[in-house]
Length: 332
Image (cartoon, one colour):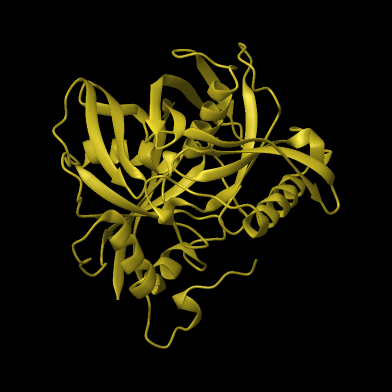
């Protein structure tokens, strides 16, 4: 068995793009492809994402044949728990990758790349100057505030207030100070424990729904913020803990989208205003409300999120027949 990949990172968050070795995926909708890969090819996700080739916080992308009209490519996202519906840092990387690899016709000053994700069509705009691809921004699917001003008793932390918002995936949003945490002073481990506690409780007790498809109605994770949601010139910090307690090194593209939806619903940001979002690693994304939209019964927005991706390597991975550990494992 041999799998080839290109490795990139966006704001420090890794993306392992599969370039060869996967068997053909049957035709169907993107959600049907996602289900097929999950049910029949999950051993390949573990091989690429888990140790000894990856690690607990590795992230991957598998390009598949698009189904939506007008899509230039389609992608399935992979992580330590399974398969996501949206990933903004991956979209930023894939936008640059698509231009560099000739998957779309390169145009200066902006090349548009239409990417079909499990949540829907995402439009990436890639800056191109002197033939070289640079920064990427994207407009995702309609994002909305699903539940506002919720409150729950969380063992070990007490009463915690939170919102739930959708930005291609559902996130709980909570001010980190409620957990006794502060960016720059508290340990990353403490942020992870707090976010995971809230996620686990809400997965058990909080019901979600999405107007487009039941497969989209799951809580992906929790984003702990510095509480600076009201519009200002300040940078606002957050940490996203998703899947099986995986930590995003970037500000999280779909998470920034969800935060913007919540901010707009609260009247904290207007159309056209831009915020800067900073991750736990210090990397930054720009985020703005491009326009309003509708998602079933929910008043929604279309967000524009921007960042920069870089290449970090190319590799071919193999598994010898008698190498059981080589099939993938995690120690935490």
